[in-house]
Image (cartoon, rainbow, N blue to C red; front, side, top):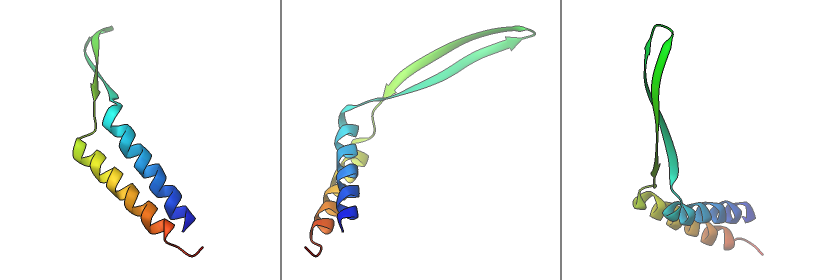
Amino acid sequence: MRLLFGIGLLVLVLGVISFFVPFPQREDHGVKIGDTHVGVQTTRNEHVPPLVSAVLVLGGAGMMIAGGRGKS
């Protein structure tokens, strides 16, 4: 049961972090003509949707509760 508690703690922490930390995404756009390549790289920061973060937090808390109720 301690394993379930540990996994729940990890999921809970990841859920809280996902509320605040954006994940960078890079895209390459370009045209190649013969031996010449002209391109632009764009970067944008995206947050995880709040619903996904909330599910991670609630799921992690639930696993911690279930893992903490085992035999002592």
